[in-house]
Image (cartoon, rainbow, N blue to C red; front, side, top):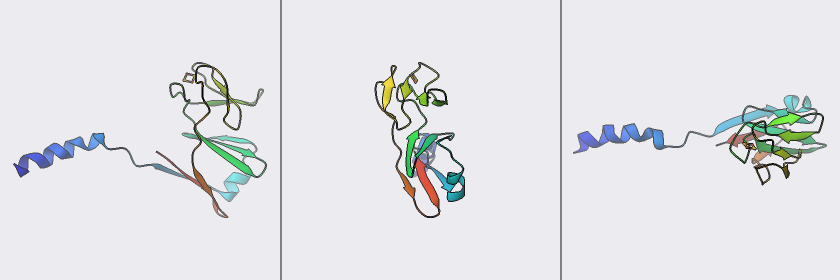
Amino acid sequence: MGFLSVPFFKNLSFLSKPAPKKIFLSKDELSKIKEIHLGEDFILVKKGQRYFVFSRRCPHLGCNLNYDPEKEWIVCPCHKSKFTLTGEYIEGPAKRDLKPLPFELNERGLSLEIS
Ligand code: FES
């Protein structure tokens, strides 16, 4: 029986979650960010000495969020949900705030994990 179960369980690897993606922005990279940085999977907002980091996925159906520099809003191109730069919901079908991502800031830079 053992010889049958090993290949069977090897093929179930698609059920496991992918490893979290680790991102690091050096202090030099952070200093070049004026107010907002759109990463592939995250949005980083710099307000004075404070940082806000959010998933770039819209809380409605997961489209990639963008930045509207005229309005200074975070906007979803799919169904037009809008959020403040600190992640509060303004309007649209998302009906909730952006998901904050935990991050660590130290003298070397900012690191976060996206799962
Ligand atoms: S996916 Fe963003 S508003 Fe629908």
